[in-house]
Image 1 (tube, one colour):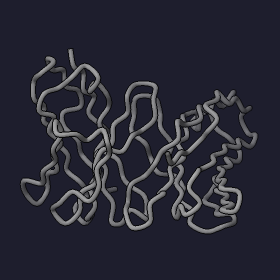
Image 2 (cartoon, chains in turn orange, yellow; image 1 turned 90 degrees about the horizontal axis):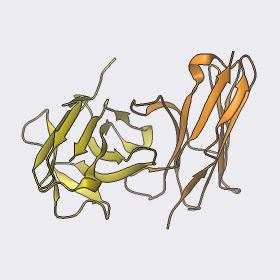
Image 3 (cartoon, helix red, strand yellow; image 1 turned 45 degrees about the horizontal axis):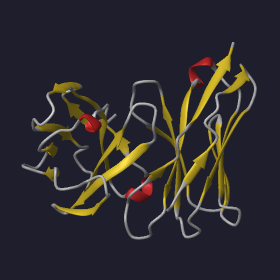
Image 4 (cartoon, helix red, strand yellow; image 1 turned 90 degrees about the vertical axis):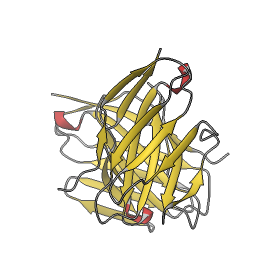
Length: 112
Length: 113
């Protein structure tokens, strides 16, 4: 069974601090990795994608990938109350098709 | 910004009835998907669709489910005989290529009573 694991939280972070979200995946041949943000009752919104080892930065967001450890993380700098949401890690585990396997998500609360 | 549009936003149906959920993907996207999310649970893959045929389906996508692209813009999910456990949010998504990640629609909340 191919799995994506996340700590469900809740994770509480003071406003202005760095929020760190983690994800592990079971399939070593996984190729593409995504972070989605989901507000309560809404659809997932793509915020970051990463395909190779290392860091990728986009504004206040940094995705980190370590394929040897089968680990992907998301850092949110200067956290804002509007960042309060559930963050979903998604992995394309099957080479040649486009299906995503999602984790259960980490609920993040930014405390003003 | 281009959007994936889903209708209706909420559908209530009696157990055993057929429902059709509708989606208009982003116009230049070639890959289409249906996912569902039962309340409080993870987003689960149902089916992917490319070049007018199903490219992959999950165990959830049994004979009660079907997908169609009846014209150049719409993409539909039909559930023939709904069960209580089909109650969930159903998300349509599209992508130029799965490698770039998807754009999800706003979802249809299906309630089976």
